[in-house]
Image (cartoon, rainbow, N blue to C red):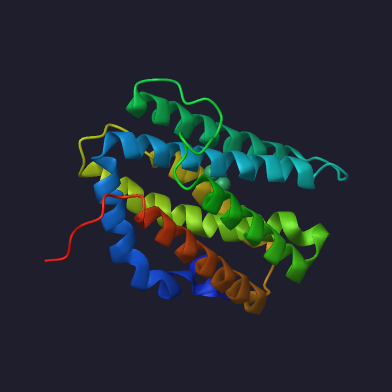
Length: 213
Ligand SMILES: [Fe+2]
Ligand SMILES: [Fe+2]
């Protein structure tokens, strides 16, 4: 059997190549804008929290394994990591997630909800945990790798290296769990890309608008 990576199998990188410039320029701008960076970090905290909660809820009627508990704990820690950094950048507490302390709170929650519903519709409730996680891990690795590159060039001290290593491992685990149905993987990754681009468009509107020359 030839070894195929989740990147090859999903076509995710090719399908997202056109968005690299936009995403990188947003990230470069937002990391140097402390008030907005705090709101963006709190949004990432919310998404990680939604991810860990989703894992917990999806396992309620199933046998909990050590591997799943570890996954859940790591996503919860990612939420804590981003919340802690959001508060560091803000210089004060950012309790919970509301419209004042979270960038694009509703569009981000909609991204997650629609993705979860769209994937569950295709693969069914039982397989949803693996597939939703797999598709989200692709995005997390793609985005956080770029974010890490931007952070290294910035004045911010945050590093995503250990978080990225965990997302990488989750990606490999979920890819194995979901098996070799690459047609479904391509289809679901394309669905996620559509939702991600929509969310990103909303995030871009949160930056100060540049006046065209
Ligand atoms: Fe995560
Ligand atoms: Fe993860």
